[in-house]
Image (cartoon, rainbow, N blue to C red; front, top):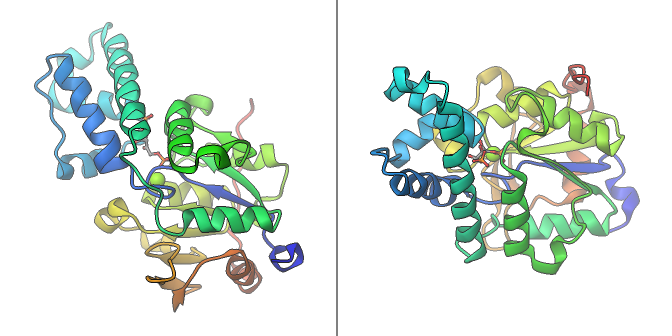
Length: 277
Ligand code: XBP
Ligand code: MG
């Protein structure tokens, strides 16, 4: 594809969990549970519980919020932060091993769109609340050698003081790209991710995941989305949903994203200022 066709979009800013791959319920959740079991804790997060807990973004924050809910007195002890950190470190190792063993695949169409973006010289970035080591493990396991240098900018985990739905991760990704937010497109699956990307001023396409099917989006956020789809689509299963409020189905590629950007120019989300680093 000629780069000029994609000109209105100069970068894609990808979320990881739920967007690149369905990692939450069969990747992160069992890793948390195994870390709890190994530590002798009677904690177990079933899918419904985990779906609720995902409202707290970040694994350490999620463990701390759970502990606070089940035993506020113990969670308030000075040693609790170290316990959370140790549980989370173990969980990260378990998650990476699960991913390296091939337990998680990219969502349909992700590889195709990454390759299309590269062919169009559209730059690639990541803005995620997950730990950086998890991102590297997922990219290595699913993309192999192609992962090398594919994403020019990766903002992950604790690199920003406040995680999604705060826009800091997206704002930092865009600042590192050195591009105006309106020349990028964010791809997100969760309510928190959509809220964050829109608040950073990024035209945003929601790719609904297992999580967003459960939680949905706030109507005010949904109304500001460029697209709200069930995925990127594949040749045997086109994506379905809405684009700029109209029903749409097809394959999401760079030409399609660029055309949506042209059409959606009047609906630009307003960015918030970047925190000082
Ligand atoms: C999703 C998250 C992450 C993972 C756990 O991130 O909220 O916290 O559930 O990762 P995103 P860590 O959708 O932004 O990729 O345990 O490494 O924090
Ligand atoms: Mg996500």
